Length: 181
Length: 256
Image (cartoon, rainbow over all chains, first blue to last red):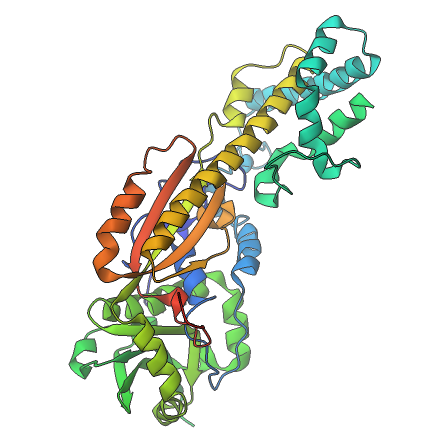
């Protein structure tokens, strides 16, 4: 195959929202066109007639799933800013200790604060927090409707958060609901 | 048995064989035409080993191969489509030889003609709309650690609420552009919203449309989309003109 086409030009910046440094892929018909745009057309559209070779084209949705697997590919991952191995002391040496320690501390801090926050709300004895609840109670209800048992009519609410936007937000509403009960 | 198959990129009308001279298809193979009853199939050889059934199933799982093939396919379709009436075929439509292609042109002459008629004088445009996010959550969280657990929860709630209204607003705004664009178009198709993995954009996509537009209205569409360029809630992205892939389905009813 002489065509040196690569995914790199079009590859997503990162699996979550951390990246965002990819410039908007532009253009229409030209060869610099975003591969995703091409794929959704050549795979899912066009005249479909039976060829002599039976084929089973990958659906664009399945392709998305497969893309997640590619992310694991090292050189690509690095381009996307996934470079944990550089901080892993077994894989690289030297400059990493401080970063590691920082990360550990950050994780512990988050874990502790998460627990405290929940405990405080359950205890409900801090005037400061009660105020917070009053302010936001209505909106909290609206937000957790995804998995709550009493649906309330809220105009123009989105029915369901899809996976791509769900991101890190999923765990939090549940925890909050528990805290309120 | 020959060691090549015939790969069909598209069907077209009024293609002078000289028009495809120098055009390269899959693996750099030369593109040629197979004409029958006024419809031209745009084809090239394809490696039989690569395209026979079992090999192909595996290849299609190989994203490098898929990407290269999709690009080669698109390159042929797009190049020829610049000055010809072209209806693209789905990826990897292959026949044993040119005779088989001729037979298919014979069988499906009416279908192809109908599709080509419908696409005549029209081009496809793609419009993608992304919700514009205010502040990226990650940055905000990094910037200042919550003072307490309650503070943390309040922030999470606020972030989620803002995220929700941001999406709502973007959807509403996108609906507005879509309605205006559809009014210019001969037909509209919705593509699946692209996952961030596929779009390469961190902002969530809220609209992914294709419009079949009379060529003379291209400027109107461009102006329309440009007028939404600085919209606070959404980011619009227009692509095109495309050969009308999204409107070439043979089964398509009367496009309104």
